[in-house]
Image 1 (cartoon, rainbow, N blue to C red):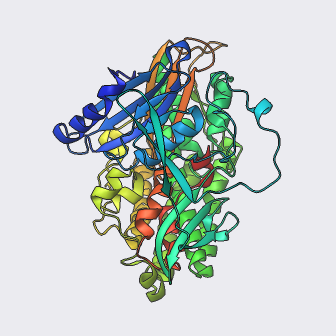
Image 2 (tube, one colour):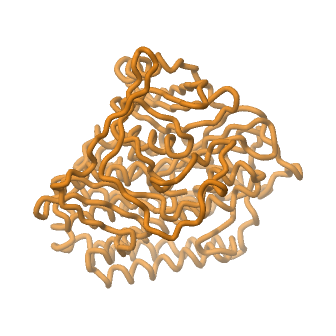
Image 3 (tube, helix red, strand yellow):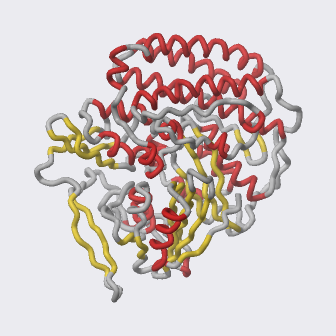
Length: 521
């Protein structure tokens, strides 16, 4: 959709955000992204949503000072802004006054410069380093006085008396190069501080020098278990910006493929969680069934993990002649496998004791921290975009949005298990009703998106995956920002783990189901 935003002056930003939160019930900060606007200065775009009314508001705040860009924090209004503002500070050097923790979040603390600035030269300022990243136990909070003076004071992250345990960056149960610094008292967790960016590839920066078709390949490599959905979101925002309407055949194909991808992702979630908790047999059963989906993908897409299937205006190839029959054969096999998962693991007394009542998040907490997807629905938050804003063929099928209310690790587990059945229901209703039509619309050799600001999102396997696109009418975007599904989840680890045992951290992280390349981007 074309993003219509309201400009807000820096001095009025906090008051306006507070008013929207209190008077218009804008309790969900969908995304926050920083912008380098050249001579205009630096800006930040905020997309706000009311979970009660569904109304959305977009704000844009610009600070003209390129030497010292300063904006007030909104982290006291929406919890997730704590990490979103650190991201904008890290990439663009925008200082948020009142924010309690102005550290970098992805780049090393000794990194020079801010890579999303248009005039940044990271290669000149940052030689290759082979030493370990310096980690600080203190941080800074900035304040702006009435006379314009910017002052800072030191805040404590970890006190000298804290006993800090490092989980990762090479721990097998972090499922990637992810580092948690965990302060414990005895065996009880007091604080979880995530250190990110170990596999950061600068995808958003790379997109600024790529053509739109070239950008597509990178989306498969963020959340690689939601590759089909990620690429779908990018194609969707480009198509909407250009006014391209794909055929009904493409809409149904994309819907079926997204749901196969969701099942694939949820099976891997189940398998890895079972392995983390010691249930090796359940792990093997899960991978047995996941192979069947990968075989279906490979036959039509040519890939099993990195699929490269969605294109601007359609899909890369039409469906393989065996696709329909193989999918129909898979559905009863998957239902049988799902029953086996419950027999093997769900009802196991050890698994139940490890998950029930562990890592509880309330509905208010998941909304404040932007935890969409199964993590939010496990706490009673109805946030499924397939229901709230149906796209492609989701308005043609009947399925249930799975929600629970306890918000514990077991609820997060069960949401995903029950969603497998709902995905099978969606596929069943579509697989014999794929309409005829072209699988690819005719596009110009060089694709240029009309000047404007656009945002589009899909319901990924882990929640809302969105793409913010700002175009100046060229063949490459001026700014692209991907709303990671995993960044809010890794931020929420602190709230979910506090007060639990250190042994519970693996269980809680496993049921959050974050994917590290999606976080680091």
